[in-house]
Length: 128
Image 1: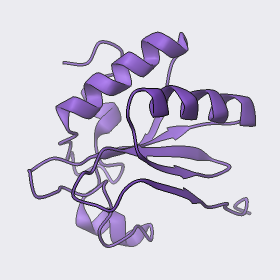
Image 2 (image 1 turned 90 degrees about the vertical axis):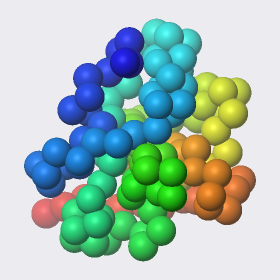
Image 3 (image 1 turned 180 degrees about the vertical axis):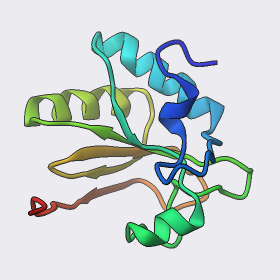
């Protein structure tokens, strides 16, 4: 059970109810929240195959259920460079090796079955 997060925060955003985030990642998120001292907002957690395809997610996304029966990724809402950098440093110190950085979120995952370490950068155009 997470100290700072509700189970629905990790559920697929399509509304299907799928929520199987790795308990080790949940513990890591709680630790990061304690260090950060402010709320951490999850913008994407576990994804079902259908939703992942609809939003253009990677076919082997760590947001999908992995070989161990859990998803291993979250996207954290970040609105400025200071917050992004501060959270990156916290998660790096906590042992996260896989990151994706964008102007909308910081993706972290602990999917040991995917290549690591990785630091990817993506930037999205504002929706009109």
